[in-house]
Every structure is written in structure tokens, then in C-alpha cells.
Image (tube, rainbow, N blue to C red; front, side, top):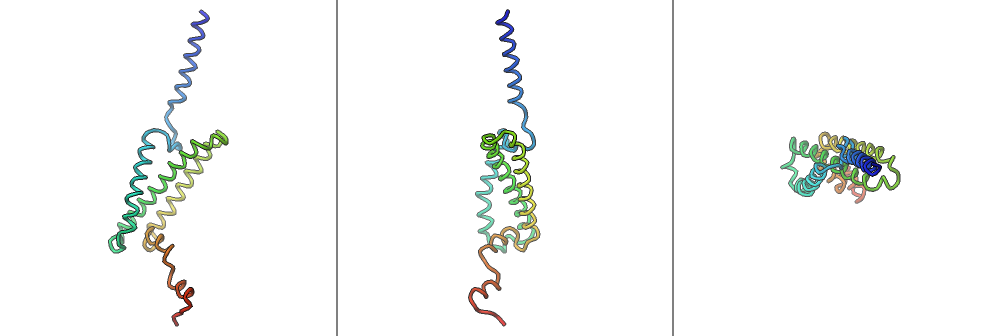
Length: 155
């Protein structure tokens, strides 16, 4: 009789543990489940293939609505990719410091993803040349800077 009660008690504990371990992921757990993994891998692949093509295509072929639409797509892809990836980091490393920090770390990750999306989407829609123009601007100084660095000024 005592053995049967122990077995029933152990089954109840196992059942409770199983319910906790199979709960559905919350909205902030971007790294939970096979769908998140497939989505993250699909975004990685699309970023790896489409981004270099976008930057190598001549500007005349990517002007206007296509440039803005692809820029917003790129902004969404980059921000979602970083959100899921940083959630993997939060899952793996934050509990080593403190399990209580895992929720706040996920909130910070979501906040960074939102700010990244808003900033890149703004550049894509309102900056001359969109994201492509902004990246090119990092390597191509404006005319005033060129003249100051060479010592040649136009009067």
C-alpha cells in the first residue's frame, strides 16, 4: 500500500513537470519551437542571398517604389533576425547570471528589434537612395568633404 502511494505521488510529480515543460511559448519567446528555428534559418538564407544582389544591382534598376519596398522588407528581415537570434542568446546565457533576468532580457531584445525596424524603415522610405544610399554614403564622402581633404575649393 505504501509503495502504491509513492508511485502515485511520483506520477503526479512527473505529470506536473511534463505540463510545465510542454507549455506553449509566450509571445516574447521568439526562439521557442521548430517554427522559430525554421523562420530564423529562412531569414538567414534570404539575407545572405538577397542583400548582396540588392547592393550590386545598378541604382537605375532599383529606384523608386522597388527600392523603398525592398528597404522595408530588409528592415523587417534584419530586425526579426536579430530579435530571434538575441533570444537564443538570452535563452543560453542569461540564466547563467540569473533566471530572473531572462524576462527583462527578452523585453530589451524586443525593444531593440522595434527600434532597429523603425530606424531602418525610416531610412528606407525617406532617405535619398534608401538603405542602399545610406550604406554607399559611408564610403562616398560628399563633395564638400572631398574638396576640404584635397585642398581644392570651388569658388
